[in-house]
Image 1 (tube, rainbow, N blue to C red):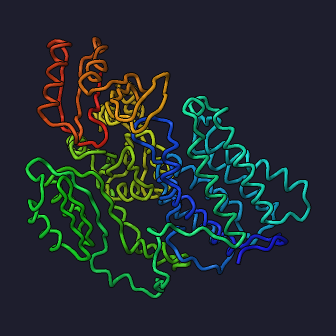
Image 2: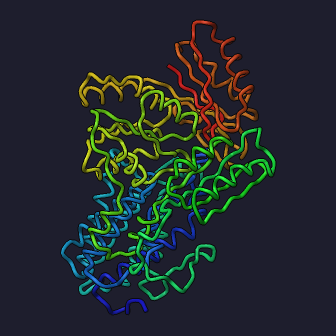
Image 3: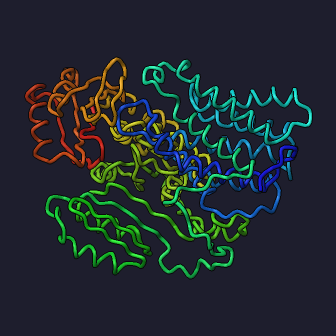
Length: 556
């Protein structure tokens, strides 16, 4: 029904409806927000990360009963578990701060509401050590500051006008983000995270006006919803919903060459869907052991995407008021310590995973550009490692904040995040580890080693843009040095040549070639590099299997 224009109280029912509508709004427009990414490489996933972070609100049929404090706290905890990417973590922390502001409140008036929103902004700012003006944080802060002024000059402030003012201030700040951040002005776009926040606030306001945003048709669930509270999860014989896309190796390109894999999938679970395309295989199956599915998949090619979800845990998220003991039963068990040190690494390809395994990493989470893992995925991996101390290597700048939240949430282990922003940094950090040293000594050594390596990457331009003075056309080849675009060429060969021109001081070079590069092509590239640099430089060539990036090169 929505709030009347005269209502001055905001309660649990209002909050749940508003958050669900905001979650649907960001989900419906995630692709549009992804396109606002100013960086020309294919990593525009701000909208997707924010949408997946708020996914629990979109999926759940929340009960409107209870206090505002209880429902906001439960939502905040779910968002932290599902948070993906920097934008997702900032958003989740905003809602956690809001929940802190609602503590012990059954309902709130406008002045209490703006105080909770201010708490949300403060919590979000804690996620970023050196915040930059012109980002989602600015949009959050400025819009809440405007509402603080609005409330102070309006006695008995009404809730709907309050949110109208919040949205107006957020939109105005978003329009001004290009003036605050030159890279946005150069690309002629507003900040993607800020745009996502505006979208969510707009969705919340529409709900309060009685016009909540619903999901796109493709997202719709049947109007006849099951009563999940009455469903016994012990009836789920195969609890892991396992999905993956396999990029076929040469031997299996074409159709009707993977019937053995099809039979295997149908034998290890139920609800199986198997799509055999010319160059890829798409698998969906409910199984008891997702590891067997993924290991078998690797016989036929490389894993392009992977998603494993525990349907028992999904059930507990669908019921907001689920019993605490029942929820605890469905959480992943923490492995008892059997050694002092353990390691978890985020890896974008199976070949890179093998390298980390050889270096002693215990558990892995597939992730990287366009496929940022959630806080809960990292936490589950950490919990499988039977050690007192777990070093967590995110190996991507957009996963570092999620890794930090994972460490904050883990109560049973000492989780130390080494803020590696690339695979070469992660490898260098692992090589520096010494089991005889203390955790603090190892942390210092690993962080120093990570920053001493130079990372080169070759990818393609995902869109037309102008970046760092370069006019870039979609499809051109980009050469990155420590994540900054340095070379723009029309061929991979030319880009590789330019990228490797200034390696005279290098002693060790490792080429990780991606899933779209053939072995002989990588060997030729390495041979040209050896000819250029001479025999004094040690050059290794490793199949990394990473998507999107033709080469990831470590230079030491």
